[in-house]
Length: 272
Image 1: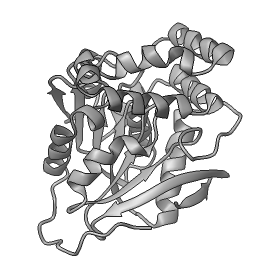
Image 2 (image 1 turned 60 degrees about the horizontal axis):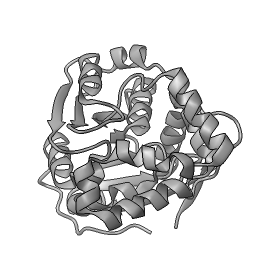
Image 3 (image 1 turned 180 degrees about the horizontal axis):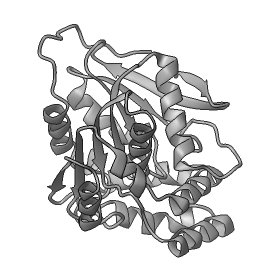
């Protein structure tokens, strides 16, 4: 269970996959941890070397008191890459993780080879909406809003098809520290990455779940339009977290877009 101190914050992370394969790092959504990528990881572990981590305030990573910014979260990711010795990497981020990936690529274009942006935008939500959510959590904790959040994450069909999984993800969400969640809400409320997106020159794939209620497909497509040369794809039937409800589609898209180097055939290895 590796931990690294980055920017004075202890981050929980995990490496897996094919050592010396093409490298890709994954950034999570608000209210989630690295477990959301489990199904995608299983499908990619023969070809990629992968980094998963809990952003500050989430999962097993440290919760800090001061409000977060997207720039700060991107600096955490870049600092983690520095410490593990990954000079260049593809980034895949979902929701706020997509914003973190965009900001990291804008800050250090020399470090990022490709971007896969999932169900994200340069600006998500309104200040009033974020303030209402923050107020509710400050008063009653995350469980008061968890049902509403999950219905925005997943289509009704997923809940009916996978009722036990639905409850697993509810427990993950409700186990998030209130302060970590609120501080990340503040980062989202105050973020506008329009200028950063306009500077991106890295090959970029932007994908949206067709049934996403948190970042609707039209918002995600508009974000793709702000990134020069990017490609937009819709994932029919998926919600806000296609890594959970459409892992086959997502893993196939990552494989195709990040261009597996066929010459790499060392054994798959789970890093510890």
